[in-house]
Length: 265
Image (cartoon, rainbow, N blue to C red; front, side):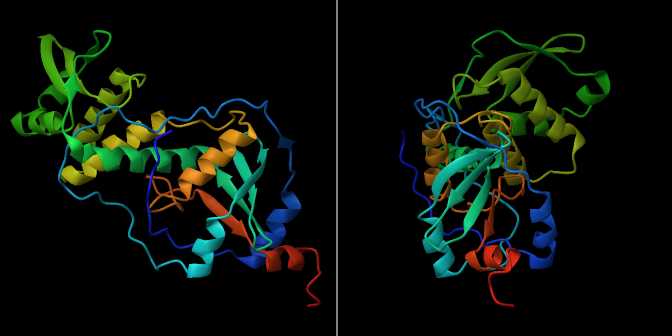
């Protein structure tokens, strides 16, 4: 597996103790363990587009404390909850819930973003693909937007009527759905308020990261869970996926003791 090196984690999400007391009453922990197999995640990218703009994400509020960073470095996967969340413990006596899809999205996103500046490589689709672009959308596809598509690694050829042939796509991973990727980027380009190229690039790479990631309701073995945790904690921002959803929630030892009224208060 390619070694990913990242730094500067996102600040830890603050937990409302009163609200958490109520949530704990609702938790029904259905621990599941998969059969031991080789980790299934591949974040290596054979080649990726090259763009010079700086990626834009949700601004950070504050820097996480050093003790939080240290505890995150020692997470140990212990179980899977509802085939969607990883339960992990740390040396601080607390535990963490990690959204496996959001975590894998973050890992893939930063891997792709790390490589997109290494050289723009495009190729013909593995399978010839045609897409339909309605006439009203064709009117929006001016020269500037075609140029933007090219910078995102996409080239289209008019095939007659409302049909276009996908003639070139970026090289991300061999198994990604090229047609869905092109349609998603086109929809964002034509129907969103995003005009800044760096934001469009962020959306395109986030889309690829999402589609290349493990899904919810997918059984993982302990090796795969630990693989996700180890790589998530190397990310620049391990606390959110590229779309801004949280990846990890912390329950401290004090919070656990308070829930079970073991604090003496």
